[in-house]
Length: 88
Image: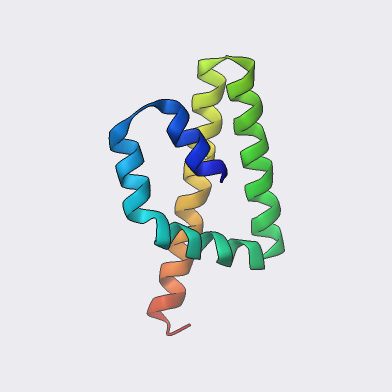
């Protein structure tokens, strides 16, 4: 999967371990995102931007794309947590 490939390419065992630990939770959040068309489209655009930035070899561009994806992911997770608190 996209996330696993990116994390593996970093060669950082800590990131790999964190990803493995959070894997089931992440898969559930990804499933929820895929059910929400606007959120899914945004995630696809973010992944494409990140992949293009990595391929370009421009570190600052890749970091910027990664930060944008994290920001968006945090917002999506906050919405999910609010839904859980509301009983949804």
